[in-house]
Image (cartoon, rainbow over all chains, first blue to last red; front, side):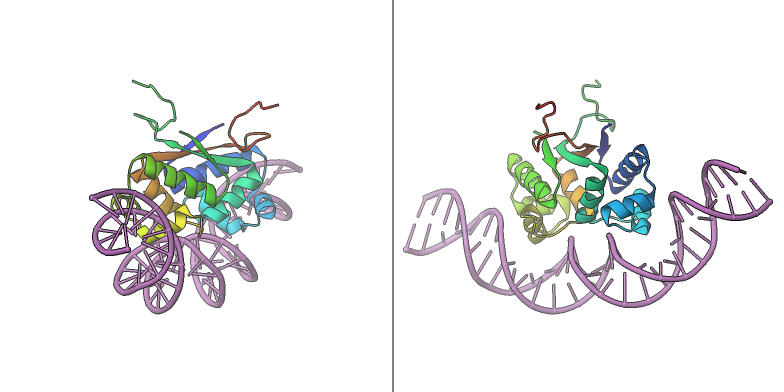
Length: 83
Length: 83
DNA sequence: GCGATCTATGATACATAGATCATAATGATG
DNA sequence: CATCATTATGATCTATGTATCATAGATCGC
């Protein structure tokens, strides 16, 4: 399961998906990551721009990592060679 | 050119690489992204945890995007099935 | 529908990221 | 070496992200 992200909102979605995929509640994730449930709620909803530090705390708790790559051409879905 | 990132420092490296690959100075990137040269310097050196917003400003100017994915097992280099 | 769990929201306080200016340090080049 | 471009550092101010507590709203099982 890979998720492209170009906006804070995209990141929020990816986190929510990963959290649910693991069967965690926000409170669970809070406990595992050290980030508060309220903060997680905001992040998942893209309400606020997050600090990288916080993001990586969440990623660690969710066993996620990110890959920095050139923008895939012509689409938002991460598939290349659409045209 | 894909760069794994699990820490703010990793992100800084990726940004510096991408910037140089495009032949931009920090000042160039500042002009294109709206982020100040001084701030870019700090980010590239992993001195400070960045805001996602700022990060995506830089990514946009560098034609980068990120992909959120499960941590690759057993290594830091993004290759799977090492063992 | 009720109660319990889960998520969102509002307020306050504090820490810190980023803008901004000045300047120092470093690096490349004639 | 001297100069110019590039990058780093230091200070101040402002904006905002996060912790924290309280609670409202939503969701789900019974």
